Length: 109
Length: 112
Image 1 (tube, rainbow over the protein chains, first blue to last red):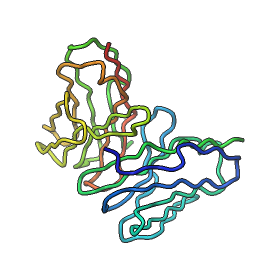
Image 2: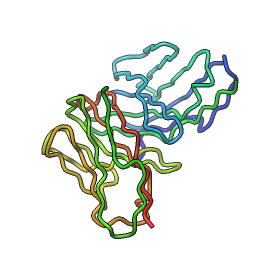
Image 3: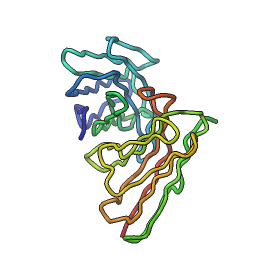
Image 4: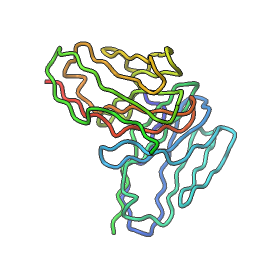
């Protein structure tokens, strides 16, 4: 069964705008990861945030984690058309990596 | 180049005909896993392996088998495929459990 649930399911923005995606989960985790998938291709690992971390940055990506609310957010700043993809959160609980259904992001040029 | 290689990329087969999807990684990763991806359901774990000769069931193991005789290879076996196993399959590996995954390019399987 799914652990993480992304919100929104779909997001459409203009190039240059920021995109925010949220992930909620149900049980305690070791870490939470975000992945990107371009149409039918393999997933690409973006960032990992451990349960004792609150915020992490990687280039134009910013991830936050609130373990008290069991939620995480992924912010993509200054979006580009190439950011168009599906984004998944994945929660790791002792060898068990669970993925959500994803957020489909469309960035219009 | 560090990668996870799956073969084949596309496969159409008939119900009941045994098939194997191969997965190989060249990063000396200990942890390997198989997922299936279906519309609206995200990725669901089929089996995972923490090291050679150590495998365990994921969420949806029914109808699948795996083996891990060597560290680099983790084949997925469908002994008697059925149409409900039509899906997009991904193999993934990581240095250890809980680390970021490297995914293969996927195998699109159709069972008729």
